[in-house]
Length: 523
Image (cartoon, rainbow, N blue to C red; front, top):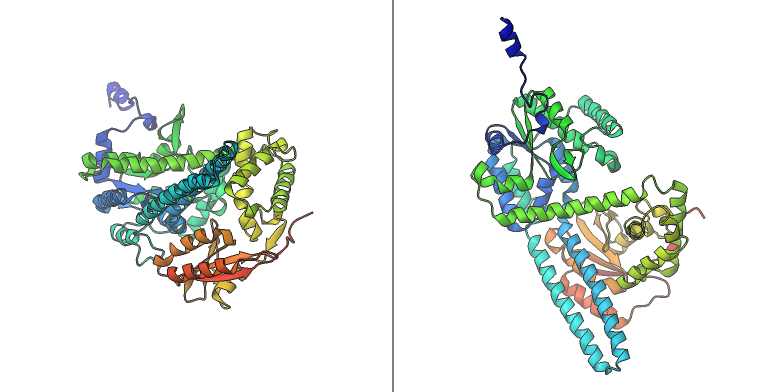
């Protein structure tokens, strides 16, 4: 070899060693999408339950067009099945949140009309007419929202044999799913995931709060690396995750995958990996895969991404305002004080407007807001009270959740509700307890039944929640109206409720519940 040849062999290009800074071209994506492997993350599968019918159809068409190039890791499928039940409820949760906000507005408007009517001496019948118009408008809009929600979930079912999404997915993903890691490798991966969390090495360290599920992102990554090496091919990783442990951010904008991930992929596989947002895949599906996608589908995915990003920012905001700022002993005193006051005012019987008013009172309370605002801004203090202790209050009274030990009084538990609704021999399905309204699944070992419960004033919401379960292929859902000592229900109201439940195909039971002092509360 001549000196010139030696110098030429050592020549390096601009991007050698800096591949992570290079922006992929359209040809790069086309080459890998058509000749390499395409791996998708969990959110793409779960979003099938969160988007409208047209967008869902487009997503499935794109996945189908990838054919044998599509691959899903075992960890992605594990996370999909673990979170599918929650995703099934997303349209209903969104509807409930909207209706809650509307009720707040209706109550505020009604209060304003009453105040105005009194000041101008408006005749009583005219005042009632105006309030009736507001109530009528609310009920009309509520009906349309419920109809739209029902339409959105028409293809969903907890019965996996009847879920249209699962039926289509099982066809598309046949033979395209990865295997779990062998036990020794899995144990080693968990250790490596824990090390990366502590060292803040990507991916996955942002999930440190997920407890036993904190290793999920790293397991997705490790399984992807192994498959790419086995196939000896380049990869497009399609993800909706925009956290900093996957993406490199410059001035708040994601510019590409983390450089460490690009380098690790190259060193482990000798190949190239490209990251692609789901919106990018849909927007370019026609040119890259010859699949027609409605432009509104891209807008719909962007909407879902914004909701997810807003939720993440809210979570981070609350964490940033609390973690490491409120000393544990101070936090303990705050939780005890808030739950004591919630007990004293009968929080569970407050209207939405009264709850909003109480949040303002807590912020002005020296023992609560006065303490919190020494660690965070006032607006964050209100978010903390609402999204941390009070979000868990109903569950805490049922004896569940991380704040159960702070509840002053506690019900005996969901077991007594299930027994009242279904009889002896029925038990609560583990991890099925939920709220808005309080509900769970009950089983006798052979059948499963949805059971929800609440105070008499929540009857309409309970019936609606139960009726939404009628198409799920389970036993007839059950509603339990709970009362407390000294609380009586008018016989006329009871008869009307029984007629409504009977026409709706819902079982209705009444239960007088007693609360007991919380044995875990340290006074």
